Amino acid sequence: MKNLLHTFFAVVLLQSCASTPYLKTNAVDTFDLSPNTEFRLSFDSDFLPAKVDPISVDLIKKAVANNLESKGHTMTEDAPILVKLTISNEEKIQNDTNFYSYPYYYRYPYPYDYDRIRLIDEYYLRVSIFDSENDQTLWTGLTRWRQNSKFEPSNDISAQNLVDLILDSI
Image (tube, rainbow, N blue to C red; front, side, top):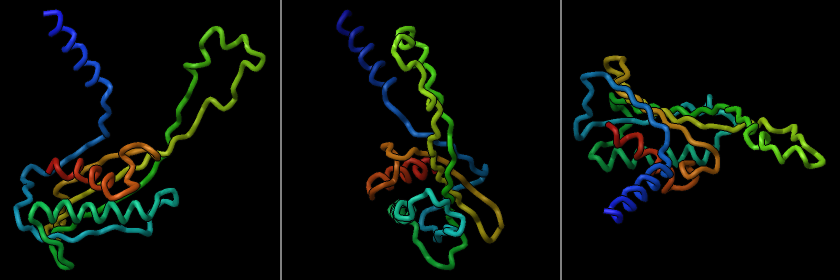
């Protein structure tokens, strides 16, 4: 019994330390992407923020095409199903005041760090499936990552993992 209890707490500890990326999806009630659907990719690079790496964008486009083609769909130029990719960034404020509340910190000769508030860039990827014949968005998925995190699409494998996270919920 004691060994089982130790195993239980070890599993709970490992599960609580695992990180999962942010994922939010929404779909029309009647949405069903039937097999052998023809699709085309759309990405508007005119609105790409300067902080977003264009090589990462190319990796994401390739990963979306690979994911959908591996599920039996085909990519054509005049398909009625449009897969829209949107990438944006946002600066998040992080306040590091918890460290400075430690009582022994104030005994040092320089007790204050004036750069306790930092801006952290977060990048968002939205994948939307749009039916151009009916002029309707059928499905959308949103995820985010930070620079130098394990979810950043800096190579083929990490870009494929990020896209698979979103598109496997279809």
